[in-house]
Length: 295
Image 1 (cartoon, rainbow, N blue to C red):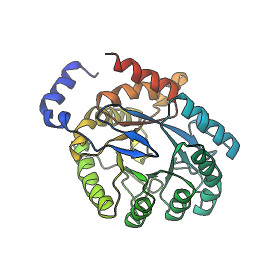
Image 2: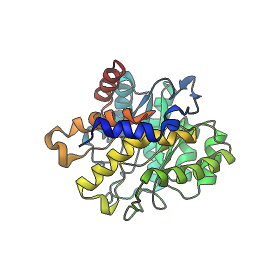
Image 3: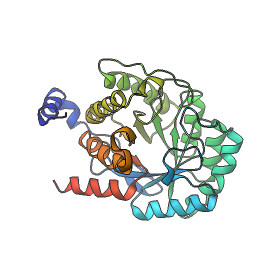
């Protein structure tokens, strides 16, 4: 059980990190400044294998409609993916991803929305950036120099996801340490340096709490790990880069109330000073953050 004493101890032990400020930047004329307010990222899944059924759009028209609804509900960024990260999901070729993504990206971007594309394929990345995407949600580690140069050439942003493997579809057991935040810090420090060396100036970091490692199948182990990372997220602010969190589901805990899971985790993520909340539940999460802001 989390206690006030736990938060007090964390704040006292890492007081300098609490005061750290993160880099702000603009995308399509919108300022993203984690020092003043958090932002929301809405999810559109083009894969029928995606677990969160409410986010699945099986046609371009349905995806565009969902994007408009998410934006009207408060999403600053629309994150679109064409391949589920579930371990048993069908692998989708880069050509197939591109053909599915382009009409959606092109239309939503033409309407002025800030569009993010979740992928680890260079060819998909380049095609979507040319079509108007403003953010690469990078779920892999291979060919990062090439990908970063593409992002820089289009004055776009990148979300650096923490992945223990070549990409999110090629992970095994999660390598636990006594303090996972130190592991995250070292990884992101290196990746931020590589991204900046290749000209990327607009960055978020994502600890990757929604990815499916084999040894995180036990719900108690997984949720305990997620909670610890959420409440310790503020320690990553010393890197000077804002943090994005993909809010998890925890079906084993919430069961028929599973759509309340992401708003619950949003509370912990907010207490940990998260800057960008990636969620399937924009309206509920927005309400939670507004209520916390009244405190």
